[in-house]
Length: 200
Image (tube, rainbow, N blue to C red):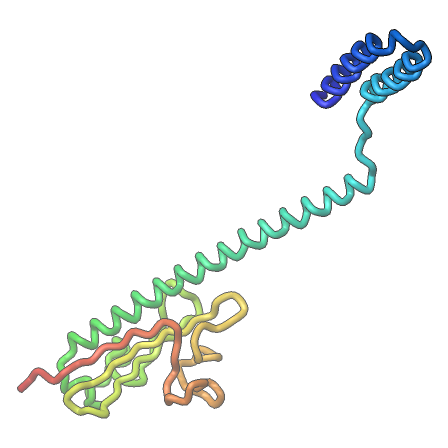
């Protein structure tokens, strides 16, 4: 619209200026008049409408953009669910660690006092209530008899994969599950502490 008005104003201005200048020759005046008339008529033409091909290309670009946004939106939900499960599993593992810390030192290594109901000895398993199909394992390393290294690992199913090395979620290190060769089930959620013998 602005371009059309500018063209019309420019054409009319040029038309009047050249009319004054062409007073000396009628032939130039006639030629310039035709050129100016043609410019004014062109400026009044309606703009071209969009073709079907242009509309289809625009729709395809819009569909691609919306699809990318929906994919990012879906991935955000998956990430939120994963973070929630990590938080729940970490809190459960920390609770087991606290129970082990509150247990007398001599009972931690004595099989007679092994209480797998409370997950207070090495090899005991537990489930996390708010994560269906989860499995936690307690390991107590007795390499240094007076300073025990306690670790709690939690594995669980997340969409189409298992978080942790326990592929069948049975709490036992089966063949092919120990990927790093350390002799225990590892997971992204692992809480480790050391418990010293303070009975001296």
